[in-house]
Amino acid sequence: MQPIEVETSEAETSGNQPSRPAWLSGLPELRREIWILALGQLLLYIGQGFTLVYASIYFVNELGFSPTQVGLALGASGVAGIFGRIWVGYAIDSEFWGRRRTLMLAAVIPALACFCLAVADTFAWLVTGNLLLGLGLSIYWPANLAITTDLTTSANRMEAFALTRLVDNLGLGVGALLAGQYMAMSGNYSILFLVKGLTYLLFGGVVFAAIAETRQPTTQPRDLLQNWWQALSHRDLLTYLVANLCFTLYTAQQSSTLPLYLADFVAHGNRPTGFSEQWISYFFAWHALLKIILQLPITRRLKALNNVLLLLIALAVWTGGFGLIWLTGIAPTGAGLVAIAAFTCLALAEIIYSPASVALVSELAPVDQRGIYFALDSQCWSIGFMVGPVLGGWALDHPETLGADLWLWFVAGGGLAAVILLWLRRQMAVNGTAAEEQAEEALVAERL
Image (cartoon, rainbow, N blue to C red; front, side):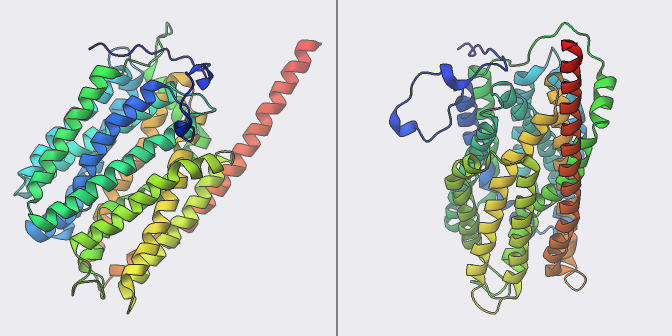
């Protein structure tokens, strides 16, 4: 089967798409390749959902590793991700690798990682699997976002990014729910990693069969060092990246520290130490369900707002969610209801944050440097997932020092991120005004 040929003109709009049935009118009008990529991504994230909630619980409660060891192993994925994202910034824009080959490589490496984790019975295997997983995921997201940006216009790009997040959340929710029911019946965690590895390979097959290269050919020679220096000298981008570290630290806690906290550190859960794996799966399924149902409607309603303003709104909701997580651990009654309220806030924050952050980077990035800009944006995730699990694991290992108060420290850190985002909003407004004035001066000079 030959890949679908793709024209990557930025000028293309969705207006030339064939008319659709009325029952599809609520969905965004996007190119066929975007929907095919979304289908493959759905398969991938169903596998991701199999282990998202249970990995830290499995390694601590079943294999006997300490929370600090698990945090260090998960943090190793962030270290590998730093190097992977440096390389992918070159690969995505290169003639040999391009978007398509890079995305296929990003499917194979995590599959190998999952097979390693399925047999991990020593700390060395645990670290090796997480190193490979971090490397593969660091390559995946910049390539995926570059392809999505290539195949969309400024008019429908935010909705395309929202679709990307929707299928992620649908896959995560379905995967986590299925895994929770499976764990309640059998308790064999290693099978979950094997199935996850197979879904990565299936995703690679979809990309190979149905997605063509979207990189626009250029006759200009590339100066890689100059391109990196240009991106690193972009003040608006750097200011955003500093603020984005807060969001990635928050996300890292949700997949590493939060499940273990709910299982072992809640005083009034449905068992003596906290909540059971089955209850935790219900919380995460509710979290994913909200994002599935509300992602497109909320994105469509808010897409006219400034991207930085949307990030500020997301930050406020996120810190509220973490405050409720802290309250869950000390609530004398109704801990389950407080947890549901917390997961609701976290879901709404992610719904607002994800499309706005990617749209902001695509707005700042020159067309021929999208790989580098998305790679730098993705570095925030490497750092967040390198520092976040280690910090969270250490906090849970030292309840007398930090313990549940970790969530309050994250709430306080959100204040610093808000100051940075307010500065970015002012900075971009000044730069935009200056650009408009230069354009007007050029127009006047041309008329004279």
